[in-house]
Image (cartoon, rainbow, N blue to C red; front, side):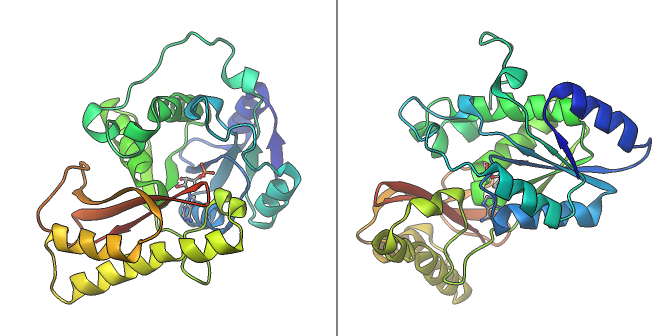
Length: 277
Ligand code: AMP
């Protein structure tokens, strides 16, 4: 596995290793890798000739009072995990490589998808995500790029970016990986103490109750959202809504067309989860 520390090394690796007609798969991460990230890598390995992973804690997607400084970082462990997963190359750029200037061209996310949920609560977050992802796409030129459904809004906005800009990259959404108790894996789960962790298990429980109710014929979103909110009782709910693929409110949940989006705060930690009907 090649460890690429700057843009020159990345360009050289790409030129020497990806032949005309070969598929390159790409997984973007902020490190502190877990089985969620590894599942994206494994999807990429199945579909492509080569797989590259980027590890970069992107400063521009964090708000001023968010956890950029204390975001978990463990480069040696991440390198070992990628090596184990038979990744072909890791790109670990320095902040100054990615942002040589602080006044530059930016791609703006579409209003409909970005003005609510995470976009409303984290001002400028998706501007930062598109800024860094577009740079990575230009440098890496992947055939296929893999993103988790864990971050549904991010996935939908990136899909929209690629479509709007006629960008020849396939965006593939991958299922949420969970721990043995059902909690969605996240690099931020390490902030949870035992008590907060146990409280956080109300999230997958809420999702399971909604799933069960839907399977049993309930589809009115008021009713399904109520079931979820009752199960989340005691947690600080940022949002718990059922929406369509444009993230607009809907009256009835429908298979393959609707998503339950949940964001809560538990013991000072923000956790996201969702369910695609
Ligand atoms: P992050 O390092 O948090 O920026 O995440 C990098 C990628 O991994 C994003 O596409 C996430 O949606 C995805 N991801 C994070 N957690 C999970 C999970 N539990 N299951 C599947 N994908 C995930």
